[in-house]
Image 1 (cartoon, helix red, strand yellow):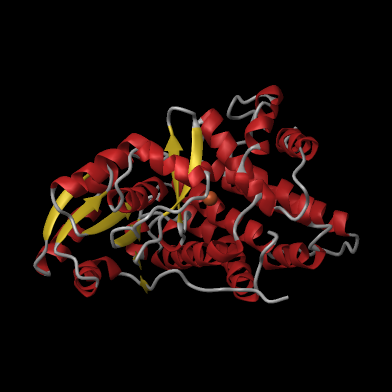
Image 2 (cartoon, helix red, strand yellow):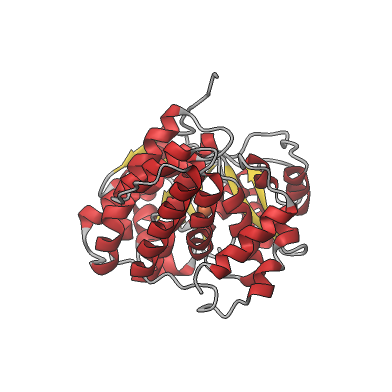
Length: 386
Ligand SMILES: [Fe+2]
């Protein structure tokens, strides 16, 4: 079988990389730049580093710090209006996944003569917009989303309570591990488990490729080794470098190989219960490994080996159960809350079945995601922690 792999955009990686933002923006031909961020990132002083670098490179900057969790559609519209008002010719997004998704949404909306609801409708119908997005540099301040290297912006349709994936490729990614130093334990762990889920799903989707597989296994090794260290010692730069690389590599991997049922379920949980994306990903990933082990027994076994587990089972289903249990144990040590901890009942999680059954990513699962199977997977997320 012929498989395609690629890398969406160049990446500048390393401690201090944020200070090169001005140089990158110059290469891309920016003059008037909208910086998209949120109040927390601004307070931490990261945004100022971007302003300083762009100003030193001779650019005029405009700040939009109103991003909110889950990239709601109205913030995308407000940012796109600013682009038009100020004749912006380049955008820099700096922040966590929601900020990067908002910046991506703004870059594609502002380049086209449509409203944000028309953008979401075209994304829903998989119809590309007429014009390519305004050039965009993305700078993550967490290690999890990988959004700086993926083509999709996940935007919340606030009217219909849905998360929609719109096409919005970035032009350049700047990954600076120093920006993640000192991140609180909870955010470190949840975002790390998001990246972990990306590679587990990329390895077991219907369209994996050898390049993404290599990145995925390496990501599992790095996260298993360095996530507990970063959680315990938030200022450990070596741990932060390894997690930043893992997260970016996971993004590059799943941009080609895609995620599937796990993220369909995580999106449903996020839209329904408003819990952090990384918690939803952490809880669903063992279930996905069990589900896909009969299709990819050797891959799931290797996931376990990369985690340092000894998997002696030879039966595919038993391999899936053993690796899933090992992952649940790892998550327990990291303090990931379970559904009962979050006061979400079995009935409530089963209530997500219809949402998942209408989520496009389910088609990328190698095991047909029937309504029955979706319900059984949701039930397992609850039952496995009893
Ligand atoms: Fe994710």
